[in-house]
Image (cartoon, rainbow, N blue to C red; front, side):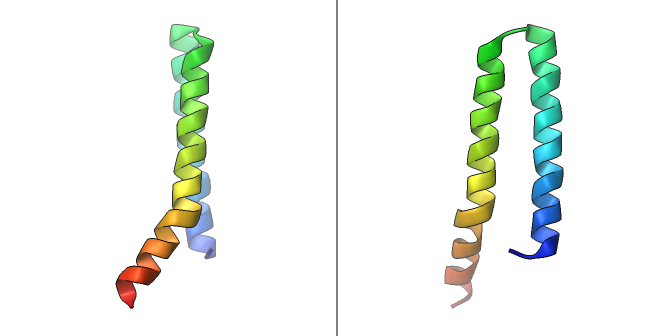
Length: 60
């Protein structure tokens, strides 16, 4: 994983976390935070593992 990808991932995570906290503050429901946390984990997993493999397979 390159430094640029890591920076982009960190930036996206920061935005998603901010949005999750903001929405949780508005709706005051714990399950919304849970859903956002699950989405964040899925997003990070997709960016870290699935995307690089997909790029490699499309190049060959």
